[in-house]
Image 1 (cartoon, rainbow, N blue to C red):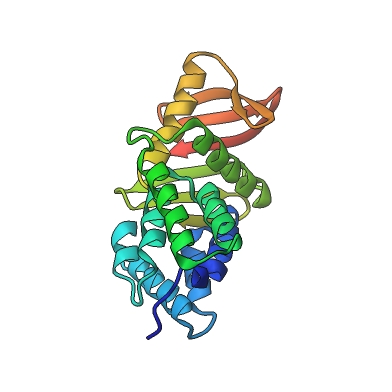
Image 2: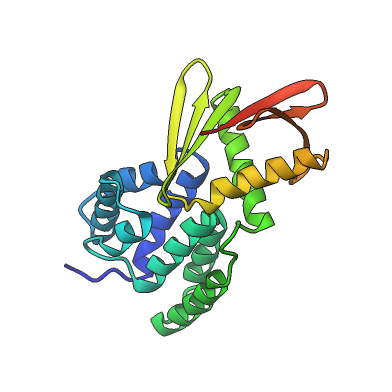
Length: 228
């Protein structure tokens, strides 16, 4: 089977970028894997099957058949661990869309790997949290959800259940640092009686019990967040 190059990954990256802000990364891998029988689609299908078999994200990526380019594999792993998939994919796309010889692309990707290797291993960065939490709020608004239940499965999967007239279950292959940061930021802002700033929006935090928080804007409740 043809070896997958970084450039070959462009359509998969576009699909994953959409998946980050809509149906979730797992579903994006599944749908792209069903697209055709090209090597990149077969790789995505293999990754999706590994994830559905409850393998951790790193193993799912590294045990895919055929495998993605090593630079892309590493970047995907760091992106999931630090919850920066959206930002990461934009940076990879920018490099690939700039073109150039394969050696030049490889060098630029190596610099990107070095950047993401240095990220925090206790909580995700403030900017990473802000972007990811904004996605959570956007999903809740799309689903007209009044409540979201968050649960971590080991260090492998981040479950988000959006509750409205129906339940929408989104699963992202994120490290436990993500949910830990969510709880830390909500607890910290509640304790300090300070507003949570997400880009140009400000939310008041109320704590309903030991594992639940509510976001408010003025006198209007926005979203209840429950940690399991």
